[in-house]
Length: 192
Image (cartoon, rainbow, N blue to C red; front, side, top):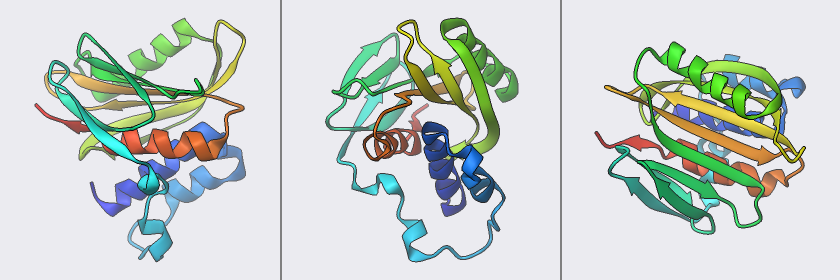
């Protein structure tokens, strides 16, 4: 993945999970001069210090790096990743084919069907694993009344797309949640 999209994606995931769009960080990350040389600190992603292991789903046709402290469950080609303290949940798996835009709409529709008080704060095109992707982020409430921050990414694939859904407790410590979520999303690779 190029530095341009690495920095952009890392920033968007962080913004999504922290709810910092109102503070203007999303605007900075998405409209900054992409050709400008980045300072050395910007070239090292915040997730760089996370201890991970590569986990592949042969049935799903992809792999990701997963923080070592997260629990991994497999089902029907998808990976379900959960932080031990329960503040972060990430699902990565194949999704129906079709256009990226339509698949992204269907993914957001499934979030709206599963959660209440869903508010989408933004959508942007990006690249994940060298492939075109659409990232949507916002807030939602689960059945237990817990307010969540979410980032859902639809990654183009053929014949099917891939979905990465990230949900974090809105009150979770960002220093524990954001680096883990970034490590997973940034490392996505389609294997077929």
